[in-house]
Image (cartoon, rainbow, N blue to C red; front, side, top):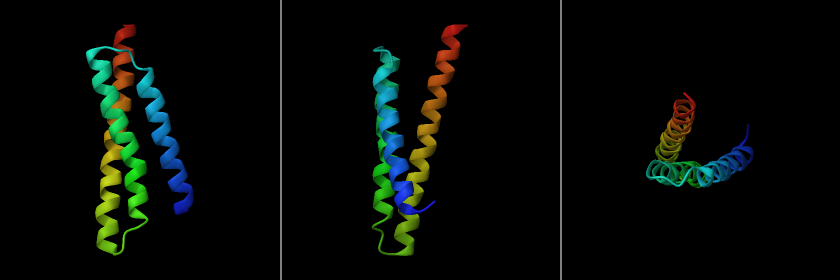
Length: 90
């Protein structure tokens, strides 16, 4: 996968996170998760774009590390949403 494809995919991921977040219930927990998922999901795309402008290898590594952290946090919130949904159905 090249940088153009990954740039496109991270942007699509951000859009999907926003759509999901906006569909969450308007509760204290739902609003909290909404803000967190929007923040980290969009951060993946924005920070990946920044990696493409890195001028040194160390700058690239630093920036891509942020992308990895934000992607992992996004994964956490997506898992948390699924856990909450499964717990509500019990």
